[in-house]
Length: 249
Image 1 (cartoon, rainbow, N blue to C red):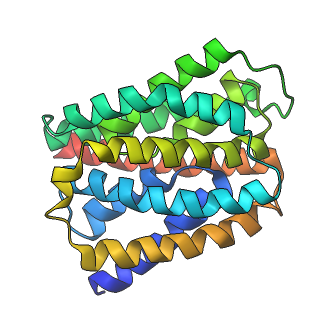
Image 2 (image 1 turned 30 degrees about the vertical axis):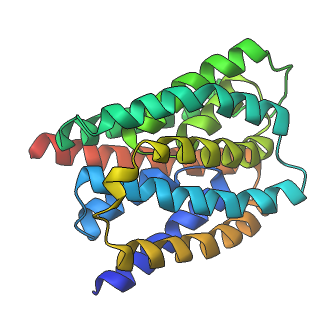
C-alpha cells in the first residue's frame, strides 16, 4: 500500500478520535507515523503536533457551536501548560527514540486505566478549583512537550476525573487545550520540522480534519459513559502494542 493511501487512512482515524473523543489523535498518529510511514520517533512526534493542532482547531469549532466547550476552565488549564510544554519540547530533542517510545506507551496506559476506573466515569459535575485546574494543566503541558502529543488522551481523564467535568464538555474543552498545547510545543520544535516529508504530513492532516467532523457526529449518538470506555480501551490497546515493541527491540 502506498504511503499516500496509508497517510489518508491513518489521518481519517486520527480525526475520528479527536472529533469524537476529544483526544487520542496523537496517541494514534505517533505509532502510525512510526510503524506505517517510517518516521523516526523524533520526526513522528513533531509531525503529530502539526497534525493534531490543525485537526483539534477544526473539531473545536464544531463542539463550541453546540455549547460543549468550557472556555474559562479550558484556557486556564491550557495557559498553565504553555511554559512546561515549551520546556518539554526543548528536552525531547535530547532524548533517545527508545526512551520517547517507552515513556509514551507508559503514560498512555496509565491514562487509559484511570478512565476505566468506576469513579472516573461519573457524569456529574462539581465546582472547578482554579488551583487544581492549573496544576493539572501544567503537568499535561510538560508531557505534551516531551512526548509530542496534543494531550487530549490525558486532558479528558483529567477534566473528567480530576475536575469533575461532564464527559461531553470534557471532549469539547479538551480540543481547546490540545490546540494551545500543540502550538506551544511546536514553538520550540521548529527546527525538527525541516526534514519532515510534507507529501505525507499534508494529506494526513487533511484527512484528519475531515475525519474530525465525522467524529463530532458520531459523538452525538453515544452516551458519555460509552465514549469514555471506547476511548480508554482503544488507548490501552495502542499503549500495550508500543510497550511490547519497545521491549522487544
